[in-house]
Length: 435
Image 1 (spheres, rainbow, N blue to C red):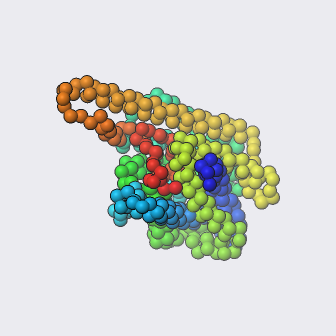
Image 2: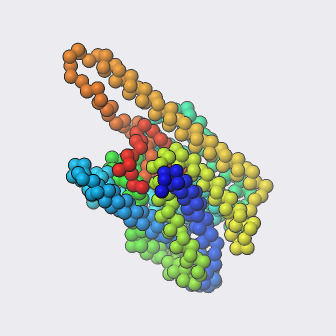
Image 3: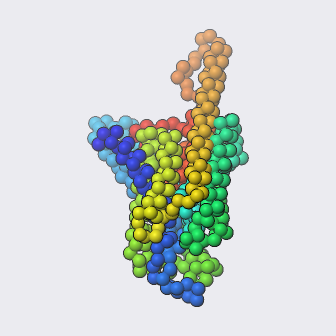
């Protein structure tokens, strides 16, 4: 398969499967099944089980480990075919990992679990398009935490991008409240505000996750797809052995007065083939989305990935409208007099993201210029006859540099997390890339 074809497939896969991830989740919450009943819940009710959907998503992410291992095996076979493999190694050093590195991933996995759960709980109360657009708030929180913890300095383009992002999020949220989005599903205005608040809060948690990965995981030399897979594995184990038992016994509004009744979730899946199909498709879409995302980042870079992620938001809105107007399923959302305000907010978010990226380019260019100036100054002051290395590589910049692209940008929970492309990000060589 030629490179243009593989690039086209990667781009198409990112848009297709990224859109499906959001649509599948929202659709599952609107489908009825026969589950358990109590005094306040009839046996037939909707599958509003955000924690169950979190488990499904982590299950899909776990399969990224299999794709990573298949890639490592393929690279090994290529080197075995050579007469004299470099350094006698049968696998690239970039793929070597150990237990300590793997265990470090549990910290962003916990953050990812919390953020994904908050997003799914928020998605229950708001439309898919508003949910997708509100996730632009992650850019704002990531910048704040990079200043606080990574000692990053923002330039005027960064600040303009952040202001535009805040304005865009405000427009999208305002359109949702004014239009009464969610009313057809029985959601009150307070429920909609609660849902939007959960989604915005989830972006703050994900910004913490991004900051952690940028600071701690950048030097671990783990393939991005490998990091995603381990986060999925740890998240799934935490859900099965800790979270699900806890939410089953904690009080809440689900069947039996529980925070979320896992037994009811199982009954709903067993009784409704559409719910079962959506859960299976969701896990598969998560896997393919991560795979396609890594291919896009490898072939085209992180900035282009950012643009595609933004387009994915528009695709979610379009598909949601098509479900509403051209199907009889009762799914999706329609347009109203406030949709223009929502579209305006979306455009402002896109512009804010691109402006912020431009700030990263300016910062990276300035740092390269300073490094070259320092090298010229050192060369001019070097005594004659002193042994110097003309090919010395400047030391890697510290945390004050613009945030490098994190492995977490592969997950759908990181819709606009590829917003930073700095000189600290080096495009991986062919033998060191996960895809």
